[in-house]
Amino acid sequence: MEDYTSMPQHSRVWIYQANRELTAAEIDMTDRLADAFLDRWTSHGALMNARIDIFYNRFIVVFVDEKTAPASGCGIDKSVNFIKEIEQENNISLLSRLNVAFRKEEKIYACAITDFSKLLAEGLVDENTIVFNNLVATKEEFDTKWESPLKETWLYQKVKV
Image 1 (spheres, one colour):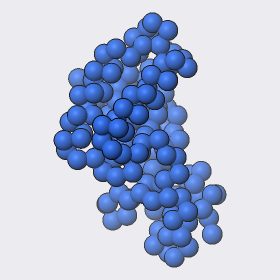
Image 2 (cartoon, one colour):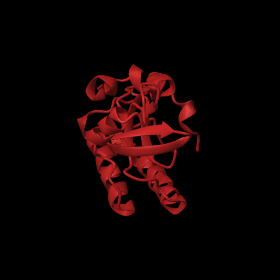
Image 3 (cartoon, one colour):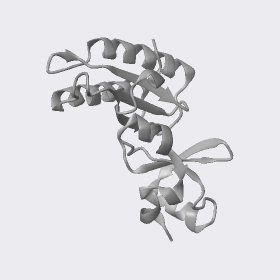
Image 4 (cartoon, helix red, strand yellow):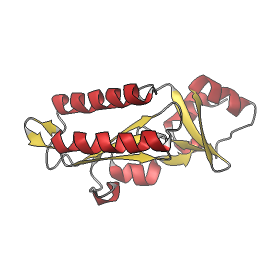
């Protein structure tokens, strides 16, 4: 199956960040479940043109070309239920929006936003630290703004000391 790069730039994106890295076995199982889900994922009866990929063993990213079939409320509900299934199967949290992921010395870390503020105040991270902006909305934004220096993200105003 093709990876996310085959999706058009206008594709809608949802990013789910795990509270820990997934193991190789968990990634294999998640990939199998994602393929099965995508084979049957519909919105108002139309099969979704979509991809689900895992990045850095931590982020499950859903891409949907809404020009072929819009992701309606019922379609989005189905995808959230799929994510909840992945959470249960892997005993992880994917739906918390209170965690921040960032890169330090090529390793990816995650922590609560409040803890990230402390790291910033202590100088352990700075405005140039690469953070993952999980609020990007399109594949184009994913490709260009998902990994950005802290100072270029919404988070900067929230945690700035």
